[in-house]
Length: 211
Image 1 (cartoon, rainbow, N blue to C red):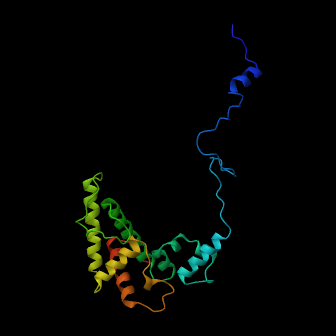
Image 2: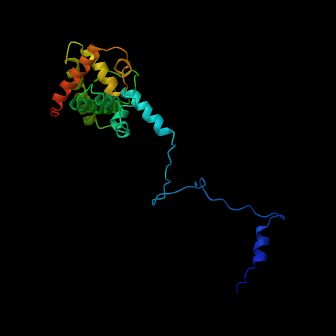
Image 3: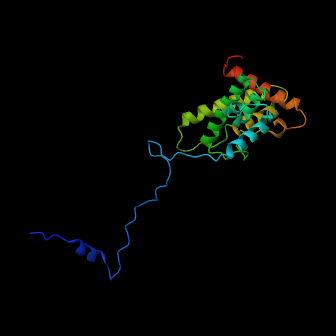
């Protein structure tokens, strides 16, 4: 027959050397307080001061402080160099889409080659070492596609090397050249012609419909 244990007996068992046993802690980090979604995730709160600052920065990047609505400034394209040039009217939608396409291909090649980026040395297409876990056929297809795109860019006009540098920086690394920034005091006809000419050739290559 089992003898019931009284609460006093339980307390005496928990007591060690006259001291009360420490409370048992739950494993893991303590649960954060706050309002939660039905799935259990916390509802993220946004600092009210962040949004105006971000919008002001985007307006500066677009060279249109006070001239654009909040909806226009919140356009996702305003957060990327190619999108900024499109919203500023320096690129057509067709040129923008061609830049997005070649940028995605270039970044895929960099990922497969495990090349450091951005602006670290990247071997010329065809001399990079593919990752050992990548299917060789996939690597060869990506390498050949990028090599062909690079050749098209180089042959797109009299400033093919400049065009290649601009396309890599804008489309692959997503970094705006200083002379293309909205607040640049002068103009750069040679650079704009090299970039737009290369993107027009790529748009034809990718069969992007004309605007």
